Length: 210
Image (cartoon, rainbow, N blue to C red; front, side):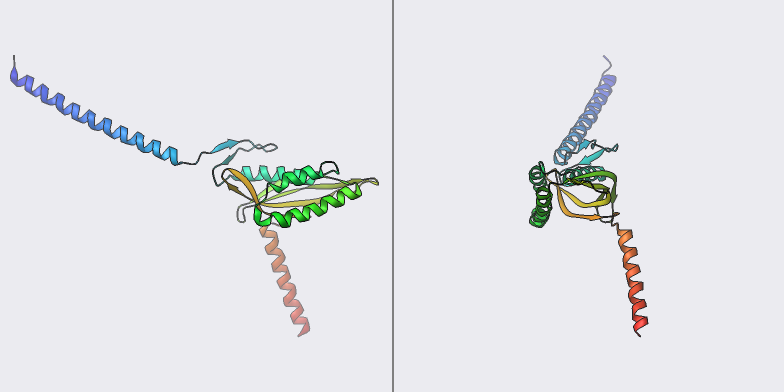
């Protein structure tokens, strides 16, 4: 037996084994770190909002633009289409959608509006025309055509905008700000133009008085 070749081969095998052990330990550590990272990561659920072609994503405490637009459109459709028969259902459904900070104020306002519709036996319909998201303010604007129908027939449709700010808490959407008004959305650019226009008018009035 060639002991010199045998010893050399044996040493090579030992070196290879040590190398393979090191690789296995590294891979096990890598898998463990990956598992820990996966367990700590918020689970994201991919959704396809009704009425919108884009996909949306929601995590534990945040959501994508598409998800907020879908939720805003659903809410506007809910509170914009009211009859004397479903008024109570609309109110009960809406109460659970808003944060406690604005719940009493918004609920009181909507309750008064719904009571008027019920007393006058008038129905309100709202057809969504446009849904816009403003990244600068994190607001969603749902604009559409509103029409009132009563004993005297249908009213002329008017433009109406619902404005929402939607957060996510424990995977659930919650409305933190809301407004409803006639006309086009009050985007930040529109408000800035109005402020600039008002400022120019104020300066003009000052010059006239002086």
